[in-house]
Structures are given as structure tokens and as C-alpha cells.
Amino acid sequence: MIPEDPNACPGCGCSKFHTLCHGADRLYATTTKTYLVIECRECRMMRLYPWPKPSELAACYPENYWYNPGADPADGLAESWRRYVLRDHVRFARRALEESGAGHLPVLDVGCGGGLFLRELGIPEKQRVGLDFSPNAAAVAWNTNGVPAVCGALPRAPFRKGAFGLITMYHVLEHLYDPVAYLKAARELLAPGARLIVQVPNSACWQFLLLGERWNGLDIPRHLIHFKERDLVNLLHHSGYEIIRRKHFSLRDNPAGLATSLAPSLDPMSRRVRGVPESKPLKLFKDGIYFLLTLASMPLAALEAAFGAGSTIMIEARPTPS
Image (cartoon, rainbow, N blue to C red; front, side, top):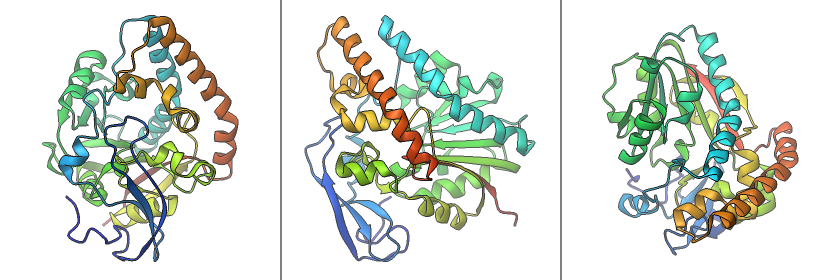
């Protein structure tokens, strides 16, 4: 739900801000409307302005917004690559499960899309649970990756309190009008000692400093809040969590994000969503160029992460004892 005062900062409530940049949907071209990216003058939290109405925002998510592999060789190669680069997320989550002592309980992936992460996590099927807004994405999760998925919002999801040993939210909070509601709902669903993992784009990264409105992490207008690390930490503390681990590099997201920032017309998902007409040889050629650009982006992505300024921030947290 949009806040009563659309000018109020979601972090501190201040209504004073200054404009950093502006832009439209350069990735999927779902709208020609231009939005501002602003920064609060008090707490310096960044956000989209004005926030689109829910019906307007829903139209900016194409029906095929999630990834569903096709049958041609290029899609097969892309699927193999996606499984490979997910290893970062899988290792991070497995360690959280091992150290929490709640590894026997189900894992809930909020914003699960096609369910590939839960499949790659290597846990029994009965412990996999997905949640997503899209019925089509939930169908892909069930039918392709063996992940039972529920459609809806986390605060109203039909789950028992204390049911989960781990809840993950990869690139979810930046899409929400009220991320606190999701974090508090997750807190209720976690078993004693269980963990939460969240990941968001990091607006304090070098990529944003270099590229400004061309940085893919802004993803105008789908990203409503642009978190810096301290914003996310403060949000978690406010919602009743203590921080355990932080990670500034994602093999899946950081290099590919830079590649998409530099050449959005080559991004495979963007081309698919926009319905770009291309023959199979041309598609394979464009995918190859994008893959090489992603590889070339790795040194800068790794360097900025080494200095704590990676283009994503991943945090493991647990509920603060009452």
C-alpha cells in the first residue's frame, strides 16, 4: 500500500529531498513515463518519485517477467550458466541452514520465480516452498523445478507460525511499498534459531557512481526503494533482526548487472520480454556477445565488492531474542 504522504521518506518520514537523476523503463519499455530518483535530505535514503499506483506498477511487470527455459540449444546453455552462477546463493544459504540447526525444517523462497534456487539448494522436495505474485511463475516452479509454490503476498500467506528454518528474499524488498510488513511477517514464520537471507541492489556501489541513471540496479519503475547497505541494516534492526553475515559480491547478479547497464539491448531477458524478432543464429550471437561482456565485467564487479561497494548486498539475519 502506498503511504498516506507520498512525499514522506519511507526511512525517516522527512518530506524534503533532492533529485539525483531521472529515467524511464530502459530495460523492458513497459512505459514511456519518466520518474525521478530522489534522495532524502535527512537520512539520505534513495527512492523512486513519484511512486506509481499499484495498478500502474502491475502493468510494468510483463507476463513473462520470470525466466522459463525454452527448448533450443541457446536456452539450454543459458540454463546451465544460471545454475552455475547460483552457486554463490546456494553456498550462502546452506551455511545459514547448517549453523542455525534448523536444516530439517522447510525453506521458503519469497519471490521464487521459476523455483530454480530451491531446486539447486539440494534439499528434499517436501522442504521446498515458494511464494510469488505470478500464477505463471508458480506453475513453472511446480512443473519444471518441483517446487510447490503459493501465489500472494507474504503478510497474508497461508503458512503456520514458526514453520520455516530459512526464509530467503532475493531482490524482493526493493519492489515493495512496505518492506517492513514483509520482514515482520517473515519474523513470525521463522522457527527459533532460524535465519532470514535478504539481497537487494546496493545504491552505494561504484557502478551507480559511474553510470548514474544507466545503472541497471535502479530498474525504473519496478524498484521503489534504492537501498544502501546502512538502509538495509537499519530496516532489519527496526523489524526485529540482528545481523549475522554480509556479502557484497554475487556471481549471478553483479557482473551481469554491469553488462546489462552497458548494453541493455543485449540482455537476453529484455529481448525476450520485448519480443525482439531474431533468428536462432542471431539470438545465439547476441547471447554470446552478452556472455563475453558479462565475463569482461567480472574484474570491476569483484574489485568494487572487495572494497565493500559491490552492486548488491546480501545479508543473513536472525530474529532478535524477545
